[in-house]
Length: 144
Picture 1 (cartoon, rainbow, N blue to C red):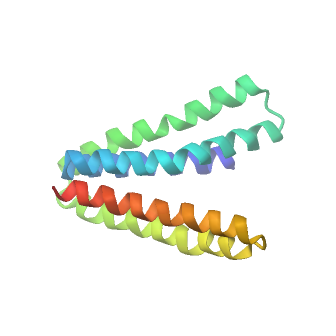
Picture 2 (cartoon, helix red, strand yellow; picture 1 turned 60 degrees about the vertical axis):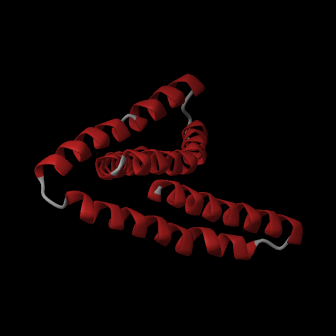
């Protein structure tokens, strides 16, 4: 189930990256950076789940890489859909943004509130705010 979910997730990431490049090259790079920043820890976690599930390290790495390639497939599909379906990107990007907001509101913020240690809590909050500021800064760059 982890691999199927990861494959679908990566495919959608590829769609989003392609759609953002169709709109604007700078937006495409900003979106790619944002997706990479959330993918790195997720893929490390997926690798850990595969190891815990009994896969050998090499096999887990190869399988994780193969399912990561679904992002490339999503990129190709997203590019061709955006060229063949009118307004495809106008619907894709807001759905993607809503997905990220949903994840932050339903998963990340409640986890931050569970932390009892004040130092860890402040560090987590600072990193969360840093992420928001980073995306805000990327948004300013895209506008110029």
